[in-house]
Length: 208
Image 1 (cartoon, rainbow, N blue to C red):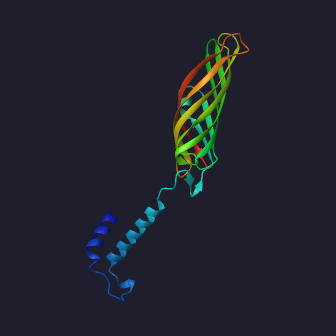
Image 2 (tube, rainbow, N blue to C red):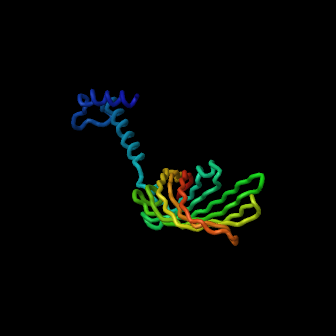
């Protein structure tokens, strides 16, 4: 409010109070001096809050992003982490891993998985913005609910997502994808199954 009142005083009175040629700054009306100070501070604040280009922090391009899928963890799907490495302004490699364990009175199901891929940023750059890319996925696990048995799967997929990175490097994102996998028992007599699996992610992490 003080700045608004000062600005109004400036526009209404400073024109009539302009010093003549040769007048020193100390002789200028106080209202004019204060108003000019307000406008100078405002210009400095606006310059200081100008948005940086996407994928940059303090003028430096980001290279690494590490995230954790909090939605999967909250829903009991296990831990799903991901590391993204910027290769160029538009291309980034992706490596991920996941772990899950489900317990029941008759046993448990434990699963380890990995993924690899590459993303292209349709909008944005250096790990921030809208991205799309292919995935290669694989996993191995043990199911002891009906007697110890190993299982595994391997497949291909694609993912579309968005990453937001703050000035402090804090990262949040969302993604959706589809995997086509071949899965079956490891060393068992059962046949393999082929099918598609949609998925979603809500990621939080850090970029530098």
